[in-house]
Image (cartoon, rainbow, N blue to C red; front, side, top):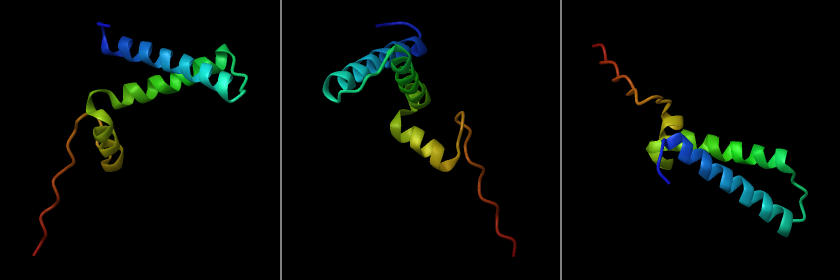
Length: 81
């Protein structure tokens, strides 16, 4: 699958959401309808788009360190004598 990275993430998330709903309906006896399946797929898409090119480690570090959009943390201030 080629194309815009957001399109690819949305297609993967849609497939994962549908597969999750199917497995929950079949094996857990849940009754998940199409609206709830869309919610699951949206959750997957949000995670995939947030992780993006950073990867899981980069996304976790960005949340942990508070670094967004690739902006580096400011350098520590020099101690005053």
